[in-house]
Length: 109
Image (cartoon, rainbow, N blue to C red; front, side):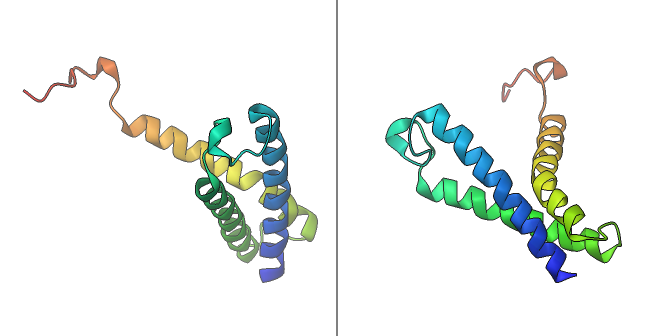
């Protein structure tokens, strides 16, 4: 099962490479360079590490529940799951934050 987790990490690495190319074009250079509106090297490397860990953990978990039955599916899960987890957390965050129409007004009385 741990081999499927490695395939998932490989899939996430491919996803990170595509994101790197997109970010390089957006900032016209190295995306981690702060002087080019990048986030900085520490933030960028942390993002990559979290991306790979999420892919490995989710792929390993799915492989243990028999959803993943071969390397191709594990690779695809590694490509897709970090993106899906990001969207899930974004929707949970937006649901948890109060909106302007909640009547709170934002004041602290």
